[in-house]
Image 1 (tube, rainbow, N blue to C red):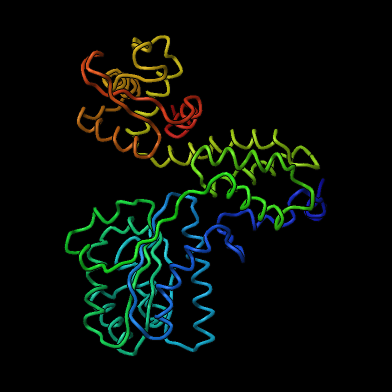
Image 2: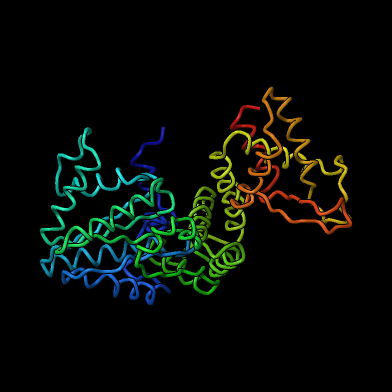
Length: 398
């Protein structure tokens, strides 16, 4: 029987797996130096006791927003200690801290430990905040996925009011969002009170992705453990897909796992190709498992239609292979529901679900010209149909 010591003694390709994590913050953030400096310039006056603007950072997933802000926070807190200033910065993931109450409780407990206990109301939190600001405290809240906050308008109102009610200190937010149009969803009065600086993170190109991967390889792998063409392939695949550095790191990590299981001494292109397939499955699984039941059933119906397209009466010559009429999909979805003894949703709810699935990238939609059944919507699955079928069948027990 193998022991833990024997397993730990085995040398693999990876010497430091931590650096392959998307949560790892390297000492040098490649290709984001200018953006980081821009944000730091906005926040720096807080270290001198001055009021600062709110900052909103936009960009798609994997463009370095969170990593850059964590890097900035680290530098800010180091400067705070050197300068002995009354400024502080807090990071919060708003998928977890998704309300004004949770956000204020989370950072106020650092100053007032008793508020971590239940029973305190928002008015008490507000009084404690005003007390802090009157002492001259400068507080910056980094709110990652700020659009996930349920009462964002109320949060910004409270923030604005606290700054108006205190003359000495100040509280500002750095909001991070994947949605460039996030502000348009806010109440007009909220938007007008923000007084913010906007910073946009664009996707990495293939050259930049290769540089990022090479940096992690040097930090995390044994020397000479990764073939040069494997690095280039990861960069090319990721740039073609979405420019998402997290996806590139996922490919690298999965390829390393595959190579090590093989007992290979070199990570090669073939390992990257296998990792790509696994990553696609993992990404689809994560997205599909979090869907409401009827959205899963719509994707399932579309996946089954895509697999058995020869049996579906659709004018592929006119609309392109892989696309289906929305009405045909709805009919098939209702058949799936009946087979599972589920009540299908109305056509109106179905249309709303289609819009949401399209926004998530799980399907893609377009419209026909007037010559094909009039002006109607066409739908195509956005993930591997076999994978979607396997994942949803397992998830809902078909």
